[in-house]
Amino acid sequence: MAIYYDRKCLLIKQTCIEIKLKACPALCNGRQRNYNGASAKKENKTVRKHVNGIDHVVITTRDLDSAQDTFRRMGFTLTPRGHHTLGSRNHCVMFGQDYFELLMVPQRLPGREYYYDFARVGDGLAAVALKTDNARGAYGELTAAALAPSEPVDFSRPVQLPEGTKNASFRITQLGLEHTPGGQVFLCQHFTRDVVWRPEYQTHANTATGLAALAILSNDVPATAAAYERLFDVKARIINEGLLINTSDTPIAVVGEHALAKRLPGVWISARHQPCMGALFIRVADRDMAQRTLRAAGLHPIRMPDGSVAVGAAEAHGVAIIFG
Image (cartoon, rainbow, N blue to C red):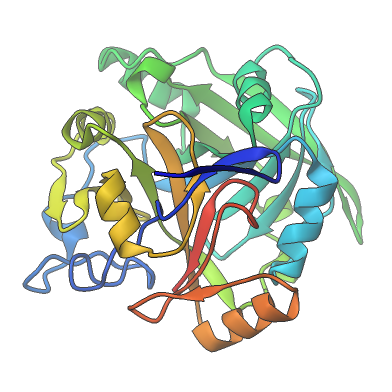
């Protein structure tokens, strides 16, 4: 298979995913269902007390200015630039219940080494943050499960608001990388949701409304899925493309390269060493509007067989993004 070098990252042709509605209905409308239509959440709910689904995902970049410009042109409303007390910088794309983050780490800082090293290879989808109401409780729970979480760490970033500057405050605990093939996974407890989830940042020109799914590309689907079964304490469900992990909300699909290429023909994903987090599915209210917005920005969206709209990793900082 041909490998290309473009936009400072390696790309490999035809290796992205469409999780078809036939195989897993409504990955792009936010509800998981099995083949006979029963709710997957009811049949396969995660039982971890302090792990409550996906809070956000992290796209790491070496050039935050460029990423900011790209995602604005894609029709996303971005929050103002944030400066973490840990030394990293970010913009967020907020939805009603979740979001994704554009993150840059300017140097190899304590606690941020993974993101700095990740970006040296190229931009891409680097991490998943899980929701928790109690990071210390999650730390104890995951320690008991031998998942090697780090000691919880508190940090913050100032946010400029019309009423003045407030701090967005968080507590996180990170799982050992050996237990989360494909990328970093951490638990994120929000202390100031009112500062982060501002209504003025939740309306997007491309009609995006939330995270629908993410896909991990693996050359050993059962082994990779097993790690996430253990994390969420659930049994993966077989789908046409591989295995699906229920997280209580946004699902994680673990898929093989050939299934990925077949489902998203002509769409590219960064050619990182497998397993890697390669595709992000975004729920939109209007696919046609999403496509028009992307085209107006000079991007090259591709209509998929199911009607969703995909932008390849070459244009989306190392991650294929599917609007459905």
